[in-house]
Length: 254
Image 1 (cartoon, helix red, strand yellow):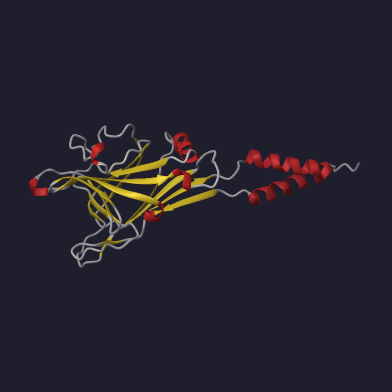
Image 2 (spheres, helix red, strand yellow):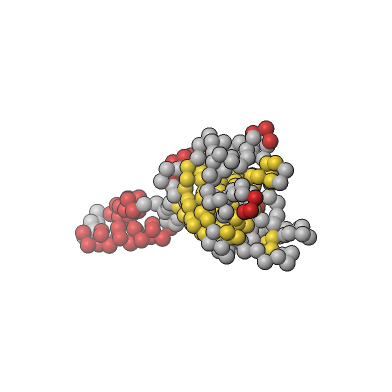
């Protein structure tokens, strides 16, 4: 039996390590706007609660200011993703989740920026999958809560917050997975809904974001790129790669 020298064995293992690493790629799944998930807007309206299944134009996130001189109708938005459609096979963990929002531009002549008034944009994760559009479920802008969500959902975890100024067109941020990683992975593997809620606790904050489908109204219509939610599963760890290299080296000794 031919025995490799220590130097040759190490070289073989190193070569195997790089070969394994070359095939170990992170998995990425991107959900893009209305093609991949529903966008529901809930809040105040002129004549009572408004609940909108967004099909074109824009979605809005507003704070609430009840003052007649500065009236701002509170609006929060839900992204409802199908966890089972993200990956072809079960995942063990998530490295990151990134959300990209793009400003909605008026196409009917008005000059309205995507962020109309400064304020905080907040993102929450919830496992509550009830239909927010169904009147029977009673989802509204909770006027007793600064961000309009209150205790309507069975659970809420703040996973992102960014301050925006008037004129901002696009915003990107990474979801804080610290408290939700295990739950989120479990819901993806079980094919359950993945829901993110967008709201603001700034009274005068007002914003419009694209959905990827132009509006059809002749009075006030918007257009803007679709939002994107990107999930990244890390490549196999170094330990797994070293194990792969070790096996390869052992095979070379036979």
